[in-house]
Image (cartoon, rainbow, N blue to C red; front, side):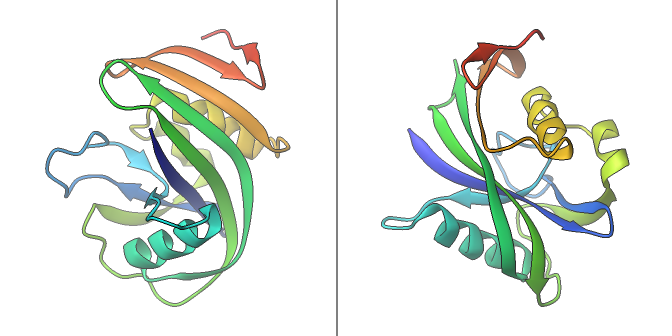
Length: 156
């Protein structure tokens, strides 16, 4: 199992999105996602969040909220616990990211992007200001095979 963070940085009704087009052998290749990454030894979720955002974007977060924990189960990858954040306070300027292209995307336009199907579920929860949630997403290959929100199966 691995622990990761993912953050959707907000500004002017937009999210800072990362188009994953630069890394070799990237399971997210071609997808649009937030920014984040794997925990280092001894890191808390917020320490990982701040470090990963700074490394990938050049921005230093000053205000964020933990919105939920998403468990990814796959027949191809190890199970992942992703700590999902939004942030609306930051300092600094964007840098080039070695994992893809960063872009501010209007929230209303995000659903039209090439996203993981499960990401659409938690992005909708974020948009609805859902209180802290637990979401389990099960994949068979690239296909979303199941979703459970706070213990209740979702219809796909």
